[in-house]
Image 1 (cartoon, rainbow, N blue to C red):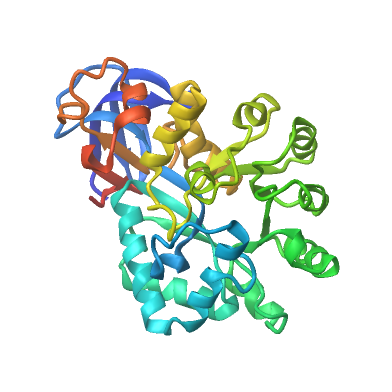
Image 2: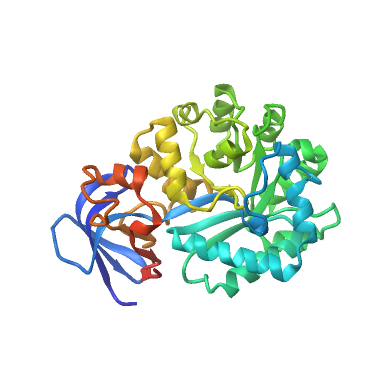
Amino acid sequence: MKELTLSGTIAYGDDFEEKEGYVVIESGKIKEIGEEKIETALNGIIIPAFVNAHTHIGDSIAKEPDFMPLEQLVGPGGFKHKILAETPYDVLVSSMQSTIEDIIASGTQMFADFREGGVSGVIALKEAFSSSGSEDKLSVRIFGRTRDGAEDINTLFDSVDGIGVSSVANHKPEDLEFLAEEAKRRGKMFAIHAGERNADDIKGAIELEPDFIVHLTKATLHDFQKMRDNNIGAVVCVRSNLVTGVGLPPLRQMLESGLTVGVGTDNVMLNAPNIFSEMEFISKIFRLDEREVLKMCTLNSAKVLQVGEIVGSIEEGKKANLLVIRNDAPNMRNVRNPIKGVVRRATRNDIAAVIYEGAVVR
């Protein structure tokens, strides 16, 4: 693979330190990072490509439903599941394909999808991924789930990267315990939703010792400390929580407790899978340091998905999955702090290049 050199302001290392210089890419990896100023064809603000740690792209077939209570919207037998049940297979695949193309265009290198529909749902996602020509543009982590208790468990586990289930309130305890234990035995990940509507399902979720828990809007410092002590990550979906009216996660407490906190965009029917928007909301609602927000959307999400050693930050030897943001675009011109500008105001329109494993894919 041909060598590629980028230049500009680099969000360098795990601390996302601003550094002026250049990045040399070779054979899909970051070969060298230097501090000299050089002229290159691709110049701007260089950040890691995004990692979207929680999506449901199957519901791309029903965007922007009416506002309704969360249980009515996505609970068992609710609006979402009725729509999915009546949607023809080819329509489902086509809608997911469009969303995958949108994910690529907005600068994401990896997304994790909680896939409804059992094995057939997993097959539909894989077909959408393949038919969109995405294998050399981004990667996907598929978290499947059983369907109606009749799924062949071996076939399901063989087809997914992990198991991703809804609240403990929606399942028999023995079924969840079996899935959690079986995932661990097979070397697969296990993740669960909890603390979205109320706090009743948080204790049960933590006791399953999942790899990560999604939402946690009703969780407490005590819950976060237990998660930290059990090496359980967290994923927040702030825009989704705003749309469904369940409140906001206590994000500062999560971070201060030492949790690894990643970011997801959740249901595509509620929000576009656009991490730029998620960063802006998080930054302006919680007033966090911009480097912390960028880290949540890149390295932290990669760590939650157990790939933080190879992607998520800009260091020699890591995969070259990067974004170059134009600092001469009308929206970014006169930004005084490059990283702050990316987090608070950049959009997909400000992308100069999306680079995946060393190749420019946009």
